[in-house]
Image 1 (cartoon, rainbow over the protein chains, first blue to last red):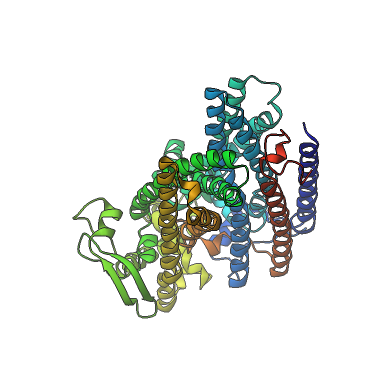
Image 2 (cartoon, rainbow over the protein chains, first blue to last red; image 1 turned 90 degrees about the horizontal axis):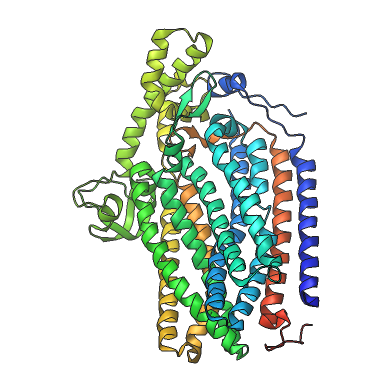
Length: 58
Length: 518
């Protein structure tokens, strides 16, 4: 493997790692605590006459 | 009722992430088969230049793959956060192809991509070619499962609603698998990916030829891209027409909207080449019509009618009234599942349950909906005509533009004088973004044209959205946009850097520019 190939491989590995870190950060900041639990009871409320489905932000 | 801002933000977030994701996907799909062709030429002829071509274009493919991988994960995040009711309602069906796609992508596609890059010195020629073929098959199979899931959203077959679990349940896996909409969508979409790959190779090869560098390498690459691209664009156009046929059967609303067909015309209907749709008065202020064409494309017959928007609205009004009864019966059944009379009533109207749910946008208890609310819900069943009409025509126009380019490229490749046609090389270079634009436009037509539904006729979009705060959606939207923009900038930087270096980046000593960027 030539020097430039090694450099590209290093850059791509770093990029994928950075991407995973960023994705984890996005998940941590915006997704982790926003859990919307839906079961047949909440679905019934949502799809029939109740005002709204429930939000279970924790 | 959910705020429209919440629904719009959830839709915008999903649209942005999906469109970013699909910048990477078609190139991956298309490049795999071009690599198979190049490596097959190497195995058959033993000429080193074909191996160099496979390795160089494979390097650009690898950059795209490394950047694109995991960009789809944010959509999976959103199914859980922004679309929780959707996930509950249809997860039983939608989840299966998504899970199979995950397995395909991780265990088949990724394994063979790893072997492709690191197997050159460890595998024989034929073994490595087999790896490249399996990489291409894995990539395409991965796309198949996603498109089966999406095809089901367009034409929900093989599933029934259960009032016990309050969700759709799969009753026929094979109907989901062989859904005609999914199959037509799959072949159309992967063919568009092949065109993208071919245009990528054609454009960069044209760039080398215009610069007069790496001429033999560029000539061979250009020829392969021209032939593969021409076959692929023919396939896109023919299969696009084919996918218009199931659209005609399963989603007449989308077809009528994208053709600005307000009235049901006598068969075979004409095709509006150009029109200025007037949505308020439900007519076209101006139109140039080609007789018969729409009827033949949409029905494959001369005597079958295609319903116009006004007729569809009338049918939908009936379905909304029937859906009102279904929602009322569902509510009673949830309180008393043993009520046989209500169960019979529900089963009679369950096919229109989704239409009843359209009223939830305007009233909590759909049974008390006023005639004005019903009228608004009827109007909602038709997506906005002008954006669909023009987006579709732009996509088709780009398709025919690419047909002309690949046709000319193939013609002069056969004649052997394409390198002496600077106009052709410049056209090939400047048309590099066109397949990506076409792909994005195609997805817009498919998804915007399905509105107001997430699952056509079953689940309205506004009922699919989670009850989140608008602030949290703005936050995650900003996070996603920042993340994808960063990826796109890095991708463009790496692609431009290695494309400019050309095959000299392989360090074989056989190409121009060998040490300029060392």
